[in-house]
Amino acid sequence: MKLGFIGAGNMGTAILKGILSSGFLPPEEIAVYDVNPQQSARFAESKPIRIAQSLEGLVEGCDCILLAVKPVYLKDVLLAAKPLADGKDFISIAAGWTFAMLTGILNEKSGARVLRVMPNTPAMVGAGFTALCEQTTLSEESFQWAKALFATLGEVAVLPESQFDAIVALTGSSPAYVFIFIEAMADAAVKLGLPRALAYRAAAQAVLGSAQMVLMTEEHPAKLKDMVCSPGGTTIEAVASLERDGFRSAVINAMVACAEKSRSMGETKPKA
Image 1 (tube, rainbow, N blue to C red):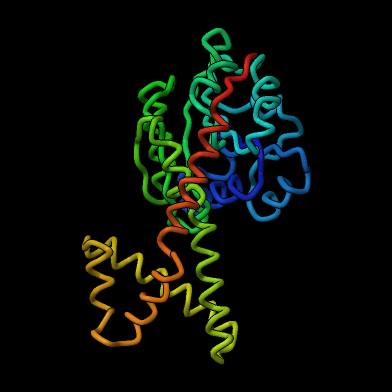
Image 2 (cartoon, rainbow, N blue to C red):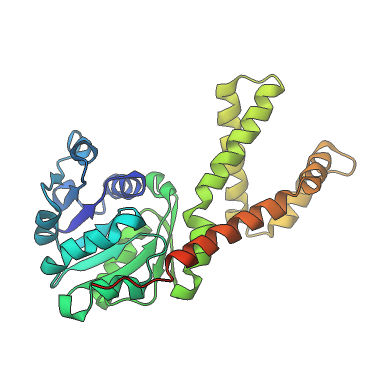
């Protein structure tokens, strides 16, 4: 078995669905284990992936293990996997778990190799962004394989770990900010008389189209904003209202708070 997932929650599900949709690996080369049997079994309904009956069984039967559990549970998972970790590659997506924290348990004596990554949920639809940590014990071949895997789910960047707290705030958590923005725009549209279904679809399309303009034109976002703001027009009136209400400051403050939380989660190095 090539790839095993420990955890089939929201992020693990997003990555798994993205891999299956892209065809990077056939379902037969993927296994899943989750403490909730129903959570992992639902994937077997449509794809012939293997459902592992235990964490130990999954680790033993897979070459590469993707750790997709919540950060608070990761230490127990690593300790359980460690006796069977020799010769295995482990990819962690847990926010706040630094390379030092991971190798504090899966150290050289365990025989395991470790890579830290930070993906986001748009991987589910092939529009994700994944940061891979430069600091890794994976072989060059395994690292390139992991990079190719996440590239099938969207954009990929290789970054020093010193930038990971920022990337957690910028891409790992930001889909939540965007969903709140879409919801708020739709609520306003409903207040103004539009049907809710149309409001959600139109708001989402506006965000999608705006993002594509930034990526495809490579123009500064401020220039693209200015293109929409006619003198004395409706858009500049809305922009002025956003500025009065501290829109930019709210976004910046939220991202700084997110990064600080990520940093604080990585301050204590767990011991095996």
